[in-house]
Amino acid sequence: MLKQVDFISTLHNRTKRDYRQRVLDHDKAECAVVACQWGEDYWDGERQFGYGGYRYDGRWRGMAEKLAQRYGLRAGDRILDVGCGKAYLLYELTQVVPGVEVVGFDLSEYGLTHAKEELSHRLVRGHASSLPFADNAFDLVISVITLHNLPCFDLERAIREIQRVGRGTNRYIAVESFRNEREKVNLLYWQLTCRSFYSPEEWAWWYRRCGYTGDYDFIFFE
Image (cartoon, rainbow, N blue to C red; front, side, top):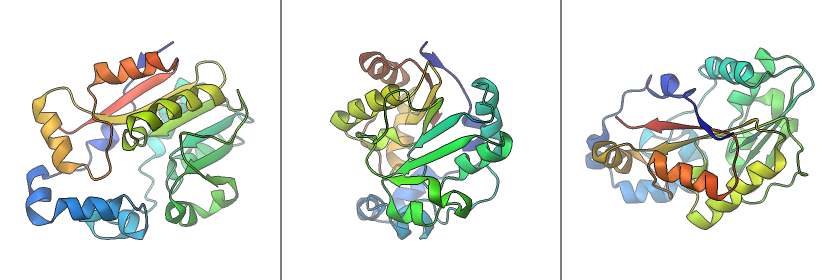
């Protein structure tokens, strides 16, 4: 059953952001061109191109614990992360629930190449709009801060794919969104790769349209 949850806001709000300064300090359009290549600059280059150095520091452990509790994860369960990046959240899930089987899926060759070494054999490269997995293949499917990077035609296919490859209702999607004009402006200032700009109500419309039956979550730029 479609339900909004809040698993990621605590992690997101740990970082302080100067939204206007991001636009004033650099040619943001040029930075976005670089970021959308999903290469070294995006992950480990200067901050204006993306993460500014995305390294394992344990920050995803709390979220892994929330996911494990919410979905009753246990040894033997299969978990897919669509847009896994460097697979830090997946790694934390293997630590929180020993014995789970995880698969990471991402478009970025650099991200997967520099992912958590322990999971290097569990990572697959591809586009979220076409998942190379059988129907009902996973006990939990997650996608964290990824789907808003897709244009609407790919977004619809990706949501339907996430629904297809999961079993039951154990699915979780988190995206960037806005609840008012100030948050919308801040999102526009900060984002580099976003293609789908929607309010929570619009995202819920997309999920219903695509037959998605899992949980959904948002980060807001307050």
